[in-house]
Amino acid sequence: MDIHVISAFPQILAGALGESMLKRAQDRQIARIFLHDLRAFGIGKHKQIDDYSYGGGAGMILKPEPIFACVESVRKQHQVDCALTYLTPAGKVFKQKDAVELSFRKQLFFLCGHYKGVDQRVLDQLVGEELSIGDYVLTGGEIAALAVVDAVVRLLPGVLNDIDSADTDSFQTGLLDHPHYTRPEVFRGVGVPEVLLSGDHQAVQRWRDEKSIEITRQKRTDLYEKYIEL
Ligand code: ADE
Figure 1: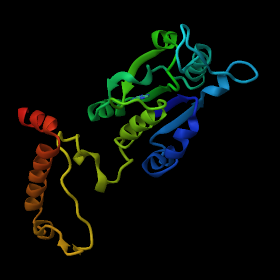
Figure 2 (figure 1 turned 45 degrees about the horizontal axis):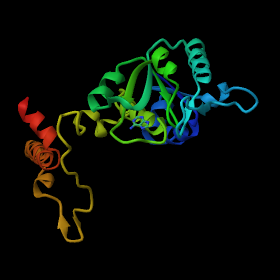
Figure 3 (figure 1 turned 45 degrees about the vertical axis):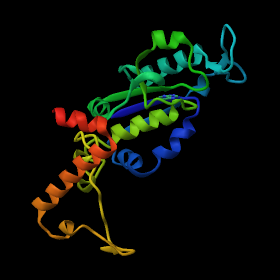
Figure 4 (figure 1 turned 90 degrees about the horizontal axis):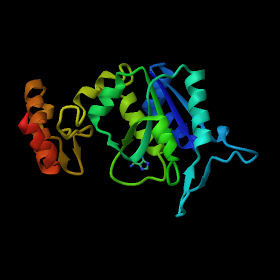
């Protein structure tokens, strides 16, 4: 999968992309992730990318010219023909099922806003989809793009080892995950549930399923109700 991200602050993404599973996915050539610095398409000597909002009010707006130039350059240079996805609190709220859907695509193309957002002509003419990672406002789309990229890339075959296979993830099953224990067997006087030491795989599975259901019912009534409706 090829993933392109346009950002005025690509370094926010670069750190996270160079660690753990996102690094592994790139090292294994399962995902190629390209960061495109909007500033490189800025206007004039100062490489200006933002400006005041017509009509007044606080907050700067990302100008259309650098974004159009950057998007057009990425499309041409990298043969990108998929829709451009803009990260914004106004977008559709990103869920695990969206991560699964995006994980089947060959290319992903993200635009991160910053400050008060982008000129409306960018949204009208360049953006195909809008995604939000939740009902709160971040300083920019970078952290949101990272969340989406991370959730998608870990689903690509070969990124996770069998042991942390995505099939048993919280949400993938419609339920939250069951509790996990590792060594030591007794920690500060608290032991591991007996069944996990029993070697009885069916009993372990039954215990895990029951715990998943119980935890979901306690912590996320909304998910639990959906689960029992199925
Ligand atoms: N940009 C700012 N806040 C955001 C959010 N909640 N989701 C996606 N992009 C954003």
